[in-house]
Amino acid sequence: MTSIATCKSCGAPVIWCVTTTGKKMPVDARESSRGNLTLERQPDGELLARYVEPGTGTHTSHFATCPHAAQHRGHGQGSLPGMGA
Ligand SMILES: [Zn+2]
Image 1 (tube, rainbow, N blue to C red):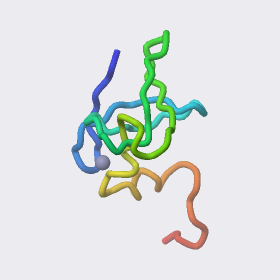
Image 2: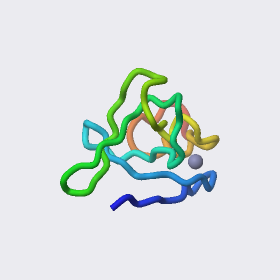
Image 3: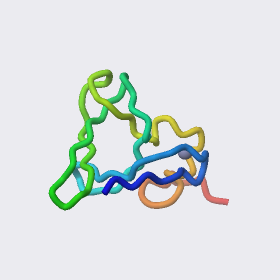
């Protein structure tokens, strides 16, 4: 099942995929001729997002195009030290 979702930050349609490292990642639902991802349907129905050379893929990570990507990255891993309130 392809589950199209909506980015809570900018409202763009996204597809939740799983990366080769097993992490969930929102990918732009709209195909891009300049993408750096290819999507592969897995036997369990998940879509695997595999990074390829920029321009050879069919899709783009929504992290790369979301105008509010910083909010996505704000929780979870990778918080910058010294940025707290
Ligand atoms: Zn967004």
